[in-house]
Image 1 (cartoon, rainbow, N blue to C red):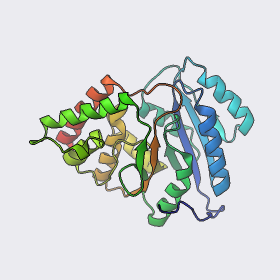
Image 2 (image 1 turned 90 degrees about the vertical axis):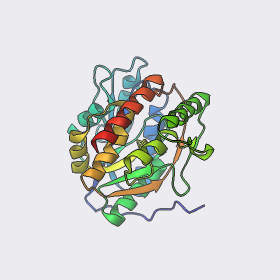
Image 3 (image 1 turned 90 degrees about the horizontal axis):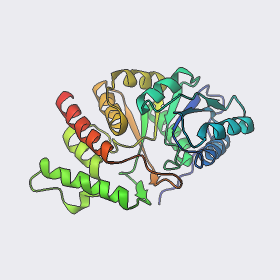
Length: 271
């Protein structure tokens, strides 16, 4: 396995990284993800801030975030809550309005995305001056671990949907690729992982992409990559390990599958 050691950065580069953490019912996960972010940013020496955008979680996520702010300081933990769930895209827009960094990192707050990869994202971006860097589960030593029966059934649903697009249907190897594979075939996006949500953007690039995107929910991340290709933005990739959430329930369900199918067809017709 390739080494994940990252050379120590120049602390005086002037760059600042704003991490956007949209949350809904993540009271168990939030303290852990924040601790890991503080740890890896502290070890790497990059300037950062963490912006928590809670959408009215009934489980007390915001109260936990307020305690974390007292521990780590208001300069590192910014709280920008909203009254109710308003969608992932609007959460990013809301967070960006309060971000002081020139780079934005988006990631899940449920521990599916490990902050240990962030120094690699930053190094990759600097190597090629990429407009965005995306974590990929489908290249190098990237992968998916810990998916339960529910997730596997959703994968199977995506496979069954391939009968409508391919004859003969996709081979068994594709089952684990699911939605991402279908999107690759139909959209030719120039990136290996469209449906992932662990990414680093130049702030101005993310602002431009959010203005272009019309999708909501599960399709939003896919459209971001497709629009980036349309606008000729450069994309770097870093292999990551995606691990299913430790606490709480997955927010991916039947409605998201239907939305994915509709969004995929919309992008296929318009890009």
